[in-house]
Image (tube, rainbow, N blue to C red; front, side, top):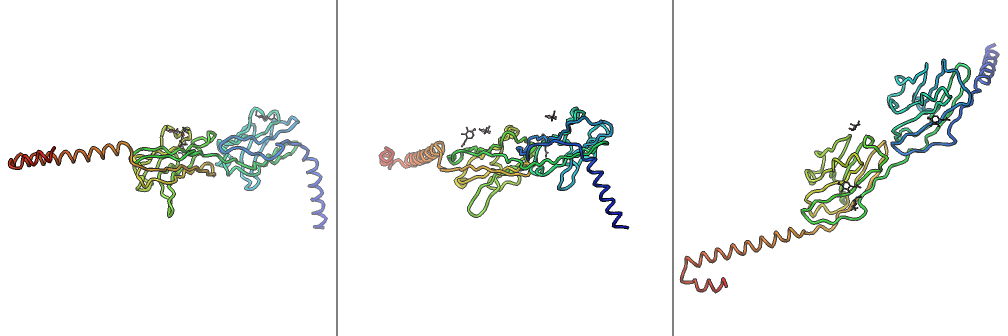
Length: 299
Ligand SMILES: *[C@@H]1O[C@H](CO)[C@@H](O)[C@H](O)[C@H]1NC(C)=O
Ligand SMILES: *[C@@H]1O[C@H](CO)[C@@H](O)[C@H](O)[C@H]1NC(C)=O
Ligand SMILES: *[C@@H]1O[C@H](CO)[C@@H](O)[C@H](O)[C@H]1NC(C)=O
Ligand SMILES: *[C@@H]1O[C@H](CO)[C@@H](O)[C@H](O)[C@H]1NC(C)=O
């Protein structure tokens, strides 16, 4: 009789599901791809008008069953949303009455890649749609297009800028490193909205800085002050945002002495030469008998 009961239940469920699963929900024509930091709409709509009373719409991730967003009793239920989607997932509330249950997901990050299920379990019907966010596109970081020449003691700027569609809030970390054969040295670090100058390698402490006013534009160019001969080499600017990373390089070459250095050097030599002559002259004056010889040397 147990078997008979199970058989009966099975058929009953089947009959129910056939009669209930009649709501046709439309979704996108294929998987979605969107750039990091952008907003994406997960389309979901029905052709027929549903009763608003008791209408419930639920979006979940299929992998974790995480609740992305819920519409219940005539409003969005932000309190039941998983924390990570708070303020990031939105229904088009004014569209719901027209059977449009699309969900907008803002500030897209790599973790948002995955499969989402939209469910419409209303009083009369039940329908669902599966939408995949197949890829979150990487961002680009551009560096210096050519190598940079500088002279000892000069200040240089090494370019590094992040794609314009990445908002500054998205940028988790920017690190400038100098690549040497044996190890990488940290030149400058930016993390969670702050420049952490203290973590720089001591060779670069107090000599490396960002252009603070340029950071909101995604410009993380490095200002390296009073360069030294050992600063010559390849620098890497690595950016971490939304769980993705990208980098660019800049090369500092030909560290010579600058014109001003050479001028200073000439001045030093001539100054010490003059001083020597002056000393000689004073010496000669106090020893009159050799004055003639001195004047001769002086000439
Ligand atoms: C649903 O609403 C959104 C926002 O207004 C709109 O972009 C989208 O085209 C709508 N979808 C349908 C099928 O009407
Ligand atoms: C750095 O960027 C600026 C502005 O885009 C550009 O004018 C300059 O040529 C770049 N410098 C190098 C070395 O690529
Ligand atoms: C960084 O600063 C921006 C704007 O001041 C702010 O919106 C954001 O929440 C900050 N992020 C962190 C991680 O502090
Ligand atoms: C970044 O800012 C620096 C300093 O203002 C400027 O020299 C450089 O050209 C800027 N880079 C870009 C790509 O705008």
